[in-house]
Image (tube, rainbow, N blue to C red):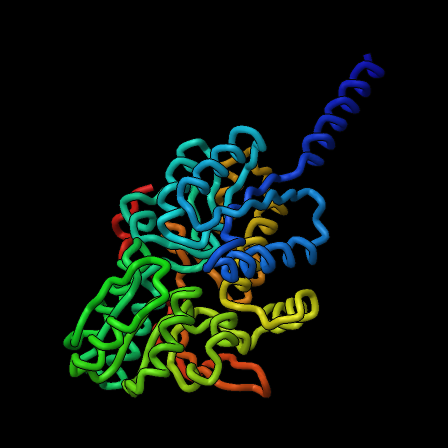
Length: 378
């Protein structure tokens, strides 16, 4: 009888060991080609750096290129869920793609952790217990830009953004905290590269300043054309239009521009200093905002894995909510709708040797949540 009990115990231990050895499968769908490729590459590289540094062999990452196309993103998500049997999805940059993928993924019982896109629809009534945003809610950095514009004394700002969910959230967020008059408000085409018409409208508008949200290649095109136009109105924007990859392409035309971000390379904490140093060593370039978000997203997943089995969703979700990891932003916490509550900084574009970068010059918003959390009923 005793021998039989020992055999049963050994069998259970073997089963437990086998179960523990099964990796957590993460499906990363992100933009790796076309005009927005730099953003997705940075998210991927930051994420994979954290995985490499952890030494954890129980995490498996499947990476695919969504080509910035919603239909491709949906096909990839369906394949990852049904064939690859992923436990967690992540990686999407663009809010229209997130809206096409996230509700279906969470409805199928998968966790989705966003390292970037934070559409208002998923922060409020469309929130879900298995959806977490590790970056921000879309409005947040634009709210900080509006607060800065108000503090700077601008009273007649011209605002523009692309016509998709993140662009709509951008202008909504800016107006929420700005409080002044608008010299003009334009929604441009997503992916647009010629801004001569918009710049002509800015010139004729009587504006005292310009706010724009144009991420990726759109921002590069606009900034270069704006600098060449002779219009000398001060420009304010979110970090997405003045991030590390964009600055090197734009060059001196961006010097002195004010922008807002929840992260920068000069945030003074040990995790961030180590991240900036090791990212440069690994990839030969300075990390961007997107790289920092990918890095934090991976470390959040790894912190939850250390505490819970992903198959036990309630326990794993609680471990994600606790967010017990060393964020490059310093203290990290989620609000009730699984979106960050965090400081958002004011940055200025500077030049360091041959490299254009940002430095923090102030804080626009402290312990800032989002305007939609009260609508979230999990």
